[in-house]
Each structure stands twice: as structure tokens, then as C-alpha cells.
Image (tube, rainbow, N blue to C red; front, side, top):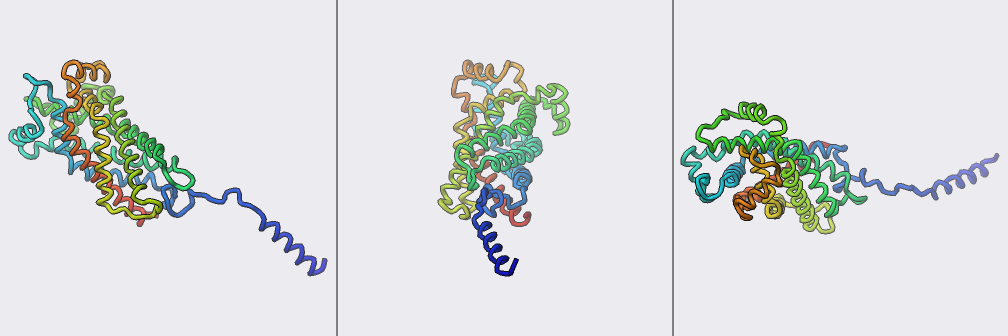
Length: 330
């Protein structure tokens, strides 16, 4: 075979190779940017867990007094011998008068211990599920963001919120008695677990899943929708932290009006008098019959102020840590 024949054959082979079509023209999971990308080497879920945990600890220290007032008002009975407070300001002033300013922080240690894993599970779950639900362009539709938020809320309800909320409510309820029994976090947890057992710690699981699931579904869906609206056609547009905070406050307000009745039932089911209710449905019916429908919106104002501030701060802090992690954690 002479040189000319070899050159001809080589050119034919090159032509054959050039007509080959790649059946996978795009692999969005390998792109450098976008929600569906993996610039962190698949560490997005882990980053979410760590950033979420740090965020939860900071956030609860800022917003706890409103949570305390909300819980006190929800545990307060109808007008009569069992009713202690006439409203939000009355609850604040009586607490400060009898226990001092730090009385508004009673039970804080319980929420700090619970808020860190709760927030870690929430954001870690959302980031993980989000990676599974994005489309080929790395975008998350409204339905998928709602579903991802629902999964995040259900996960935190099961693994963190229900046991810690039950302990928190029993702590606060115990402080309302003339002779509080719980001397501290570990002592209280030991007594509650010994007295009520595993089942008692998980009282109110169903309404908690409903509350947290609907909460996070609404919040994450609203946040993703507003962020997408702000960015327009360019997914790389930077969103200022104050704008993130404003979006968070709006998302928080939407979630409050959607599930405050569930929150009231959850609180009653986790209180020290939970034994008088057969289940969550019985609790709902008893409140409706004995206290009227407006009882389901007890504590709405303090909850609204707490949640708006809470969600705004949470998303601002979380977004800041994720930005930091994406820069220093490849």
C-alpha cells in the first residue's frame, strides 16, 4: 500500500468520525453553574446541613422571647380561673415582673439544643431533594420546590422538631406551676422521658408533620418563586441579602396564615395536659366545642412577628454561609 492510499484511507476514517453524533449532548449535572450543578463535588447536601445548623443556633437566640409569649398564650385556657393573661403585653409584663427580663428566655436551652439539628435537617433535606427534582437546565419548578419543601418539613418534624418541641412545651408549661419540677435541661429531659416514655415524647407527631411540612412547602416555594422572579432570565444575578430577608419575611407570613390552627393543636398535644385528649382530632374538636373557633388563632400576632423575623433572618444567614462555603469549599 503506497503513501497516497494511506492518506486517502485516513481521510475516510476521519470523515466517519466527524459524522458521529453524541447521544448525550448536554450533561447538566456536570455544568459549572446553576441549581442543578455540582460545583462542590456533590457536597451541596452536606453544606446545607452545616450551614443550616449554624443558622438555627443564631436565629433562635434572637427570636426566642416571641416564641415564649406565643406558647404561653396558647397554653392559657378560657376566661375564668385557669386564664392568666389578657394579651401579649400582659404576658410580657407579668413575666418580667415575676421572673425578670431573663424570664422571657426560660426554656431557651431546650430550643438551642433542638434548633441546631432541626435547621440542619431542614436545609440538608431540601438541598438533597432539590438536586433530585431539578430539570435538565438545573431549574426547580414551583411544584417541585413545593414538594422539596414538603419533604424538608416532614424530615425535620420526624427527626428533630417533635421530640424537642414536646420537651420545650412541657418545660414552659412546668414553669407556669407554683412549684416547677424541672431543674435544668438534662434533668427535665430525663424526667419527661421517664414519665411519658418514647410515645409521650412523640405526642403530636401527626400535627407536627402537617405543620412543618406545610410551613416549609409554603416558605421554600415562595422563596424560590420570588428569587426566580428577581433574577428574571439570568440565573446568575446576585440577590442582595436585604432582598433575601424581605422575601423571607413574606414567605414566613404566608406560612403563618396557612397553619396557625395546626400549631395550636400541636402545642396542646405536647403540653402537660395532653392526656385529656385522645388524639389530635379529639384535641381539635374539644377546642372547637369548648373555646370556639377563634381559639385556633391564639398567639397569631406574636407568632406572625416571630416567624417573619425568624424566616427573614434564617434565609439571610443561611444564604451568607452557603455563599461562603461555595467560595472556600470546592
